[in-house]
Length: 220
Image 1: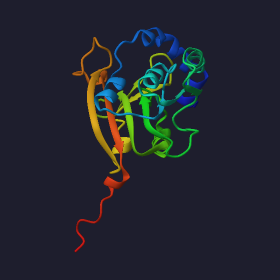
Image 2 (image 1 turned 180 degrees about the vertical axis):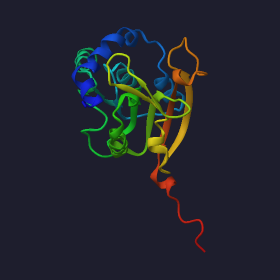
Image 3 (image 1 turned 135 degrees about the vertical axis):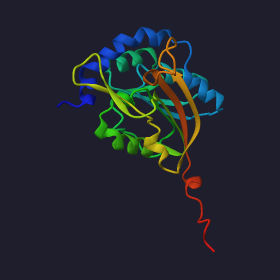
Image 4 (image 1 turned 120 degrees about the vertical axis):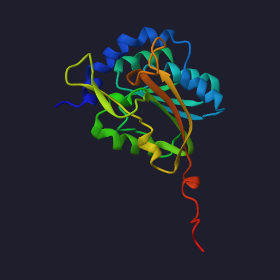
């Protein structure tokens, strides 16, 4: 069976972008940007996975003067973004293979894409994100947040699923990751977080290896 990532790289990434680009271009409120401001973060080098055409990255570049890199399976989104936002660095790709150096970014954003990733790629994705995120850097995850993991049929393609779960669990088992912000939101403004299927969450995690592994408190 064809992997979901290959389906999105070859066709569905472009189809998703076509369906949503009007909404993206008209978006006035961005919860990730607002949260970064609220926490008074000042990122210098940012990677966004699932960046669409890079609209959010360009706003972050303008606000913080950061060096910004984006990755998305939609080649159409990437090509449009390169024309519209020529001061950010965009490339087609998926989260399981990040062609960047270790410890390169002080902020990594995973922007509403993990629910469509292949389940057998989750450990690779977590390892790659951890590899490129510098110590004392921040990880932002925006995705579905139901009460327990489950899957829905993806309505646009037979045999593709959307997987809903708490994706911070890929990282917060590790004591080096500390959740510093967590907010539940409705998937769309007209929906309610009372319905778990419509609930998303924005979480910010701090990677701090030193505080995760203190000296032995039981040593006599």
